[in-house]
Image 1 (cartoon, helix red, strand yellow):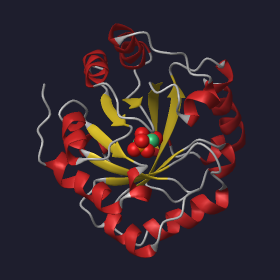
Image 2 (cartoon, rainbow, N blue to C red):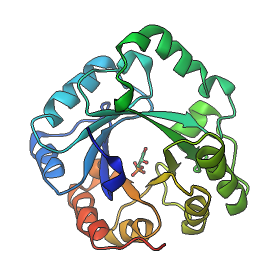
Image 3 (cartoon, rainbow, N blue to C red):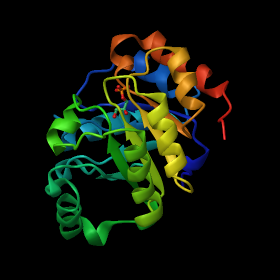
Length: 233
Ligand code: 1GP
């Protein structure tokens, strides 16, 4: 069974985007701790299955972050289930989870399931539009959201999602303080080793996504940058 608590760096691959075999090999063999498969739009059973089969040729752990009930593919090492803490549309809080359990409840291996308290901090991100994410007023509010996830809901993971833009380290630090006892993922807009190192000093795990498809070498360089940094506690 995987243990994400030791992970410092992950790549997030979008099944709706194209990645060549050589690039995929470079990512999987880069020394990253895991590959997360996930996306907001255009994620289907077929493109998720295809990507999983390709990633499975390598030893790196593979996790599916579920965003569509039509694309729940068996065979991953683990499944991350987002619970959108600041969803403005309540249908994005528990409705999909209830539908998923009605459909697949008896097949679930609960030891492979980890819930992410997902805080969407970039209002321009596709996932923010989809879930009608409420804006986060300031770092104090972000900290309170993290506390709701970690202390009220007792979720194992808090994920600060800035998808598409580089985040505010102060806000991420506030989430780190609020998410005491939970594992903190940071993702969003990392394009340089400096950015990767800055967020790795705050978060437990750094997630690198979009830059993979724009500049593979820049993406690969984030692995060493993250591994070279100690968390500041
Ligand atoms: C997206 O948090 C990840 O879900 C990573 O964000 O694609 O902006 O790197 P980027």
